[in-house]
Image (cartoon, rainbow, N blue to C red; front, side, top):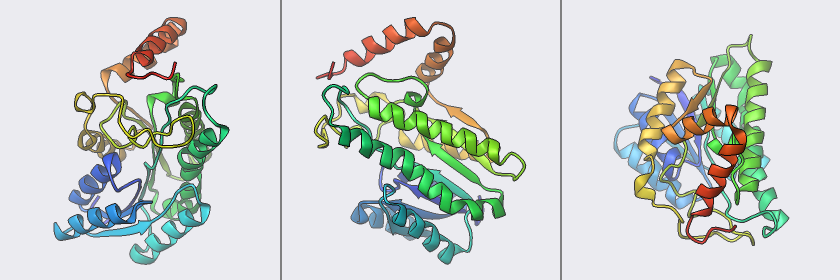
Length: 267
């Protein structure tokens, strides 16, 4: 990663912030993007004070113009792009029956179209460097989760987009990684949208029992270096995917019962 240029969206907290640190520690020049400029500048300042090269660019990935500007400012600063980590994302916690359609649309705009916009504008530079596109996804992109219809839909869409992108460019040296961390201690549950589009605030899960962002970031770094196509983390995540291939109806019931046990479950 020495002197490689790495763009990370959703870099103000959680997995994105952890990725910024671990890629910087490996010698990369990191570009941090997020909506919250105050938090973003703080992370950038901490990296710079530690002796790393970092640039903060405020960007809302649901806006195509912001994504285009993120890429152009990155190239202006560092003359290229080697790795794009599409990490910015938002979740939800409501059944489709309860949720307003605007909630589903917002998840698609951030999780799916944010990935499309950033990747589209970074692509010419990634072709030149034979670089990597990373989509930080979820097991929800393989198995629909009740109470998370919009979230699952956005992650399924991300998977299809990234797989097609990989196949389109098999002969161009482009690396595409779909990373599915499983439940990770991060801000995504606190900012998850309720049925009316407002943030739920308090996480319904015990964050201390989950995988930590720093561990996820380390796995992502290794997968990028090895140019892996897929990364699925946690034993529960791997087991869910394996069992779902052979016993989908049984897994449906298991997933339903597991999600229903959440505090204040929406179903």
